[in-house]
Image (cartoon, rainbow, N blue to C red; front, top):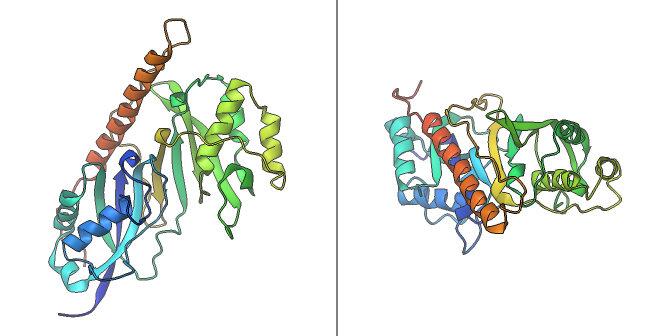
Length: 305
């Protein structure tokens, strides 16, 4: 058998509440760890390699859901030529847990880097945060504060040596069935916790605990430390990662309904809000499963070459 290898780019989706984040870690279950396990079970990557070659494009925290993320892996060229993409996808997907969807796979050049993407899209469901208060039309103005290129130190958990400069292409309301449920943010790349810290700053403004001027000052003056807090991970979705040769598909499912949170009143006490949040979490998972159903339509053809 030839020792030649082929580099593959695959796309996946997953529910984050069953995993300790995306990146592999010792002694805990992660998305990357499950993928490595499946590829080793199939015999497609070595079980003895200390450093596996399967990498993911975007890191996500525990609890964060993903519609589309991507990664690369190298396998034997003879194997890739002998199996259709359809059978490849089914073989992997059948061994993965039900909350990880293996969507597609294609051959790429060896220098193709999954971490170098055109942009990433996140969506955050603000109404899921306890005590969220919809501020109305002013939300669009608040969201626009986060657009542009700036030092995002005050809106991230900054790792040593990490460049804090980030470009946010747009930050706009997320509207479902005519109702604003949160926001969508598009950027070239994001720092650790950046979207969740952005969400908490918006939440704090909605509660009147901070002002837009304080947020703008935190952006304009990154050397003056400010901590607005971190929003919960379960309301965040990595909607997609786009590469030059692999665009983010539009929403393909017909699921366009999110239930409204109970209006503030004496009747809407703590247990009622708690039960609504559980239902709302299920709605987000239903949306993702239906998206994956359409995104994961299997190809019928063999390799194009």
